[in-house]
Image (cartoon, rainbow over all chains, first blue to last red; front, side):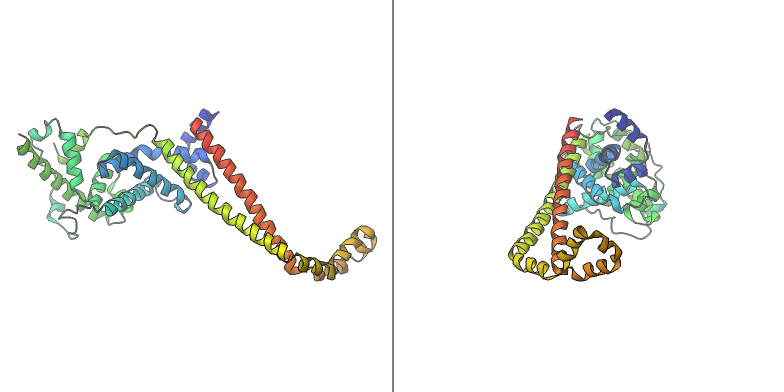
Length: 199
Length: 136
């Protein structure tokens, strides 16, 4: 019986589940959370780099989603809304921890030379051959400012379009694209700097 | 390799298996906390209004006695024919003779009482639901 309900719920769209949630359907809430749990956890973990904190902030995010689900506009994407809440939860946490590492490029809002630089230069093979590459990338990501990091993670790990990210961050799409490009350059620089140290 | 492809080197990441239960448990805790707060407010309202009625009971009773409300109600049982033949007048008379203050107070007590019962039922449902979630 429970499995039957579960399979029916799995076939429903986010908006249908939200409608059911609003009328007090607990199974719909469970399915909705389950559907987005992995992506939100992944995003928060990569933003923070700490598993227990990521777990706690994931719970916090879904608690906020549950509290404000009645205010969700069904004409918009639930996934984008969820990530906007997750991003705010992370930024609030980092603010409280006074851990914000604003990169020098973060406050530069104007058009930048980086906007026009396509990232066509391949990374040196010695970087890619390193066994600890994954850890280096995670460390390099933590060097970016939270907002820039969220752009990279949403675009690269969760397949968000720049348009969707602009919606999540409430920023113009060109700003998002520009920050993305600059972040890639910062990451490249960070990884290239690591290479000679490790050899 | 373009820089954006380095992210393919990051290992896949899955949340801990009990995270969903933890999220649901946290939502349940907040729900219960809200219900306790509502229950406390409704219970306090019931107690306060009942205490007020208890303190002003004599005034309440005399107000009812003085008004012709009870006499008119009695007429319904003793002489229904007269009531039905003069229905409009009787209804108007009843409305005029209602001790409004007392009725409002009684309605407030009823409102708080119903709220207490309703919240208690919601809490019972919430506790059962939480138990069911843990089982599945």
